[in-house]
Structures are given as structure tokens and as C-alpha cells.
Image (tube, rainbow, N blue to C red; front, side, top):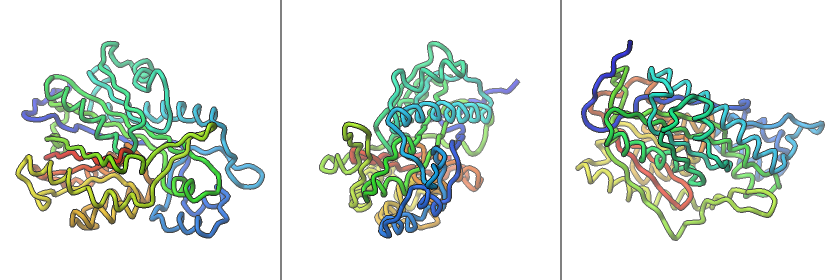
Length: 356
């Protein structure tokens, strides 16, 4: 029988698992499948610094292009793939941390690419055998920053309940929000986002007693009210379409230092004290802007750039994909500080400080 090893101090991130539903497509092949003929849109795809993405797309029709799906088909796609991918990621992270679903006391699910009522947490309780008195929260519509928003109530709960565990599931079927209308606005979205799911377990007691379980020290949020609609879903009476303002990289770059420095100041730390950087893979220009503002190197964000290149922007779970790559390197040492940054609609920046 596995023994629980008491861990003093703050709640720790005990394990992460990821999965990508659908098929893996090369970015260059998507140009044909999406029927892109406009040279400007083709350049947008080719200059995205994305090599491939997993997407849940229907088979091409007789013209060799992806047929447009109805609103109902997109809704069913989000529901089916969210539940399947979530189940896979949950089972994987529970196995990795030597836990059962009945060990989980608080379940949080995050998605912005579809709406379900009841939410994903209810379906996972039914499908995976979570306790009937498990605490649940569904975060919907908060976008790419929402993974850290979903993490906060779990950390707060586990900090107050040392014997308890929290489970975070970020599942985004971005292809269920795709729209094909030959506009540059739509092309920006279609060139960037991929489908993916990440699950993470939190608690104060580890069954592994690993050196790669950072304690979560604190969070910081920053909203930019003047830019509240810079990222948004619009509804045209038939389908949702996602809008990304062209100035987003500069908006984020001009503001990211505020929550970062505020969080570090609470712990009397400087940017130079951060050994590991995990940043949401929001796009090449976004990453370049943040890198410049914080004066961090390409090496510092290598995991994020790798996720962007291999999977695209995975919305709320992107940062956990990057974190998983950091853990797989096995270079973190006890005492190293970790800073996670996510950005999304609002315009909002979330930060989380951890220590190995």
C-alpha cells in the first residue's frame, strides 16, 4: 500500500497529464483543407511559428476542403470530445499520482469553447466515480487565462484542508469554435488555436514524495478595463466568432510587468530570482512582447515556444502543457522558483508563484 508523505507548508502541484484529441495536422496542410487562397491569409498561417496542431475536424469533402459544420454539430463536437479527452487526462493524472477518483475532494473544470448545463464536472462525477459530496466548480467563458483562475479555489481549499486533494481539468475543443468566412478576423483564429486537455492534481500530501512537486505560494491578477473587448466572442445570430485585436501583443507587453512585480514584491523577490518561466502560448508576437518587457530569454520560455510550435494555442490548458515539459526535463532543483503567467479576455493577466 502506498504511503502518504506529509508535506509541510503550502499546497503542491503533484502531477500533470495532457492529451490532444482529434488528428494532428501540419500547419501547411491546413491551408488547403481550409480552402485558403488569399496570399495574405496564407502568410498569416506560414508565419505563425506553428508547425502542427491537433484538431477535431470532419473529413474533407469532394473538393478536398473541410465542410462547414452547423452550430448543432459544433455543440455536439465540443461535448463529445471534451468528455472523452477529459476522461483520458483525469485517468492519466490519477494513475501518475497513485490516486483514485474517490480521493479527490474538489473538482474544477475549465472551458471556453462550448457551453454545457450541467457542466463538465457533473458528467465526470458520473463517468469516473468521484464522491457524491465532491466540491465542484465549472469555469466557463474566461478564456486562455482561466487555468490559473481554476487553480486558485483548489489551492485555497487544500491549504485549509491538509488531508484533501483538488483536481483541475482544462479542456478546450477550439475547433468547435471555428468559423470559415474568408475574413482576416476569422483567419487569425483558425491559424492559431488547437485542441487539447490538461489535468492537474493538488494537495499537501504526496504518495510519490517527488522532488518535482512545487508548492504554490501565491497568485496575482491584473485586469485592463479599457481593453475589455480586445478578445471576445461575438454572436451573429447563427454562430459564435472569436475576435482578437491586432494590438493584443502590445497591450499585454505593456502591462505584464505590473502583476509580475506585485507578486514578486510580496515575497521580496526579483525577476532574476525566477529560475523557471511557464507562460501561456498565446502566439509568437505575444511571447516576444512579454519576453522583451520582462527581459527574459528565449531559453527561459523554451517550453512555451515548444508547445506553440507543436500544438498551437491550447487556450486555458496551454500553461500546463508547458509545465509538463519542464517537469520532463528533470532539471528543477529544490528551492528553485517558478512563475506561471496566463493571459486572456478581460483583458486579464494571471500570475502564480511556485517553489520546488
